[in-house]
Amino acid sequence: MVDEGTPDGRGRPDFSNDELFHVLSDASRRTVLFHLRQHRAATVDELADVIAEVNGDESRGVDHEHLRTSLHHSHFPKLVDTGLITYDPEQQIVESTSLHGNIGEWLDLAVRHQIQFESVHEPDSQPDERETIQVLLVDDEPGLPETIGAYLERENDDMTVTTGASSLEAVTRLEEESFDCIVSDYQMPAISGIDFLKAVREEDATMPFIVFTAKGSESVASQAIETGVTDYVQKGPDTEQYDELADRIRKAVTGD
Image 1 (cartoon, rainbow, N blue to C red):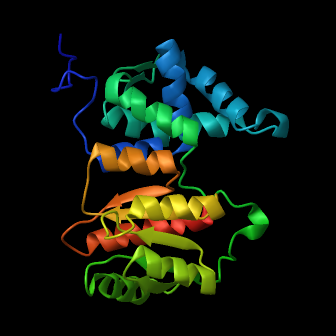
Image 2 (image 1 turned 180 degrees about the vertical axis):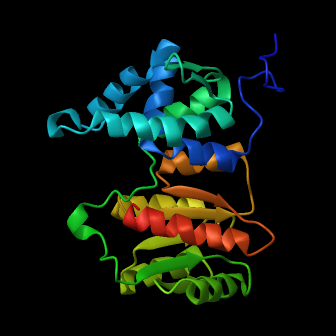
């Protein structure tokens, strides 16, 4: 039998890989979905308690009212819009709808590897808000990294972009300079973006790494998640995607 609202019958609502990745990239949303996958339904108070426990906030006396407000106004609307949960504000009950099949597999990967937008660096290792974010942008398409880099620097005063035309060139850059974030295409000759990510993770498990590619598929996103990517942004035909990339870079580095 085909699940209601899931045309392919595999328990997946109709939205893009990029949207799914964005939903799963937030730690609180992952915790909500993982809990609902196990228990099917929960109250808002129960979910706030679970998030506080998972984040270690219980010992720090975090304001649960703030957590409930964040769930109600930020996380629940996004999860409802994507068809993953239903929420009854009057009863304060949240129920899961489509957390099996492909969605469940992606959720397992996300929880297992703890992909997040917020920086995984310790606070004292984060760049000062007034400092420039040093970005290494890697893409083999002739002229494209220079075009993207020039746009990012022109529109964002807090970014400096160094470009590379291949993963091998990027490795050399990393040996010579220090960067706050790496942005890499997926499909490149010799060493793909995923292989480059693997090499980076062997040396630095915390470096923000964003895959920025026109090749959008579940297999690409799954490989990126398994390898420890920080974020996954799909290329588009206009500069709006460059603005989106800038926002994701800033969020990955600063945690804002």
